[in-house]
Length: 231
Image 1: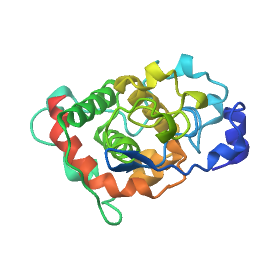
Image 2 (image 1 turned 135 degrees about the horizontal axis):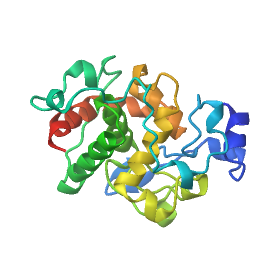
Image 3 (image 1 turned 180 degrees about the horizontal axis):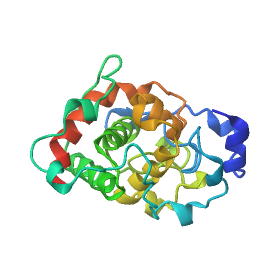
Image 4 (image 1 turned 60 degrees about the vertical axis):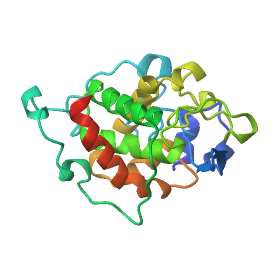
């Protein structure tokens, strides 16, 4: 992570917050990582994004017509069977994979992420990255402030931090808002669509555990495949 660039985006956040070491014990699950950087701080962010406040950019999707991840298929093409594996995981999964059983609430959060991804005009691959990131950050649970168990002020499905410019606690604990904020950051990552999930997620989240996202790609792909045409 380019710390000079980080400082320019988030002058209110100290340099030392770049390295985060989190172990949140919630219902026997350890949540590590979290979004240190604000939504405009993808490592490869284009210069024109400099200084854009979250309040003006997070929920205003401009469409990004030239983005490779935009959904160019017709409604007819999107109906029918599940998305193909090459669309969900174009590079294949990396390393040993993990899986968890989902509660009804967690399954609803998957649907919310997929719905927000489609609303943002992005494709199945973006949804896989978002779901995989949330699996690592919160195990797909919409976490509020956990007090001493919290990593600073990280909250929500993506463990985004109000103090880093992601939004208010009320906003980042709203699944649609938090997903849209994550995707805003993702779209600023050059070539995100062709990156391994763990690299794309890390450029947005700036976690102290950059390789941890990889383990969830297989389950994320299955969840998106089962949800994409039903959301």
